[in-house]
Image (cartoon, rainbow, N blue to C red; front, side):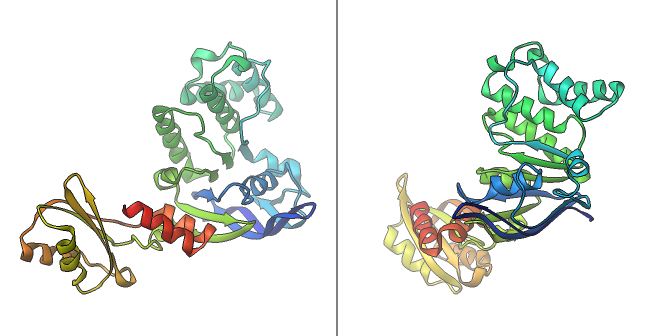
Amino acid sequence: MSALIEIDSVSKRFGALTAVDGVSFKVARGELLGFLGPNGAGKTTTMRMITGFLEPDGGNIRVSGHDVVADQVAAKALIGYLPEGAPLYGDMTPSGLLRFVTAARGLPAKRAAERIDWAVARLGLGSVLAQSIDTLSKGFKRRLGLAQALVHDPEVLILDEPTDGLDPNQKHEVRGLIREMAPHKAIIISTHLLDEVDAVCSRALIINRGRIVADGTPVELAARSSYHNAVTVTVQGVAAGDVERSLRAIAGVAKVSVATVDGGVRCTLFPAGARTIVADVSRQLQAVGWQIDQFGVETGRLEEVFRTVTTGAQGAAKGAKAAAR
């Protein structure tokens, strides 16, 4: 896969604040990168530098081989950008805005009409085309913002919170559209929704205090969680202490968390070294003959990994303890 986005040792400062500090990564055609981080971590600043809205203080950014500073016009022609908040011209109509964008992008009239029809249909904008943008709901404004980013069929998409303000059905549709486009483009999505990363992203990158602190597929990052290969079982008719003592004795179990739920006992067993303990737990449960209401194996929790790399192990431990209650 060829890299359409290349970021090399990029930094950006605002006075005494270093917002982005020596960041480097690449995004290839066919990759859908989830860009994660707490508020103020440097996500939006990085995305603005990729799109040429901010100039880096150090390092280089290339889009399909074009330097975004030295060759701005060529680089920007390949990018579709949905900014934070989707700022739009409120006195325009959606139809007028999309015609304006295709004209500014230099699309021939026939191609512009085809692409506008496609964007309107895929984003469900047909009912509001003649309405003033100022009067649109937040969801329609977000969909229109996405439409203007997609209407010229760019190779690179930079999407800041693309499903913000959408209802669950609209989120599902937009995520499906993004997945459909992903094989032919390089896409970066900034989001606070970790379920969105699991739903659409082939790779996740976490930034904190201007630096990259984790990079991998969602499965690879989730495997760094203490919940990776953890087994959760709910038992009826047995005292919590007896459940804990019996299951704690299983080989390969490093920690046991017990809680009383709906008259039963829910127990989560954390493996030592992320080993697989399903067979051992199953044998123990068969041996004791308890009534089992639920039995499940976790792949890991991306939320816990996010807390670990952005707040430290102590914060993650507190979060894991709260989740086990």
